[in-house]
Length: 295
Image (cartoon, rainbow, N blue to C red; front, side):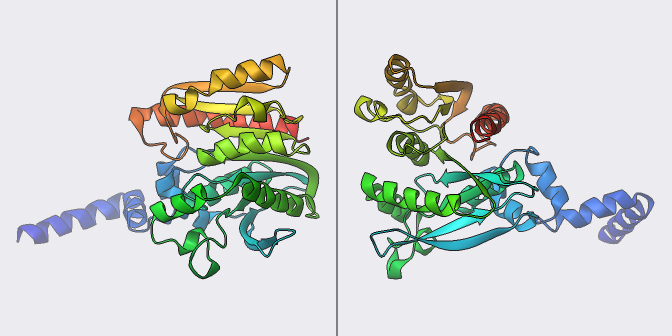
């Protein structure tokens, strides 16, 4: 009897306040746009927990391509997302964390496309998995981590160069290229700026800096480093890099966000709001920097 009266009351409330009925319906469909709007800050890449959902509702054109690596039989499985714009766009290579080409990395690429860039995210462990697979073939994150740690600098360089060349050759590309990387990928973004003289800009999210010998070869590319304040392992490498690059009169801009931890852009819900506050500052800074140097 009590249950009957409760159901009657709920029905009456939903009839009187139809907006509540709509919200109730949305609650049962986590892929709806309204749910996403409540779960992330508009204008930012989603946090990891909302990445798949963001990809499912994206209006942008994304596609998988296989990029050949010259001089080898390697083919790099690559996610490409195009912006909706009338003119040609710069190309940004999105370099993954040590966890490989995840839905979150693909969602970051999608946000970059929303911000006006052709975003290209290669699976740098393509061919390293069972039957020639990549990240998608792994049975655990630990397995992907092992494959990434086994990559040599020369391998990463060859794969990034192949993907960059592919991007430059796209009819919709304007000839400018940049990198953005996260954690392990942040380190690779910084290193790639030292190894690829044609790069126009590099963004480093909480990645360690190259050693002084590598830094001495930094190309024309300005570097933007974005770091969590509570990430001493990484942050201990900032000042040595600053000293070397200052002496060389190279452009290395640094921002450190108080209270944020490692991986703050992916883990936006962490550290009592500090990670989200860092992301809200870091992402607009990223887009401003990329636009400035890839015109």
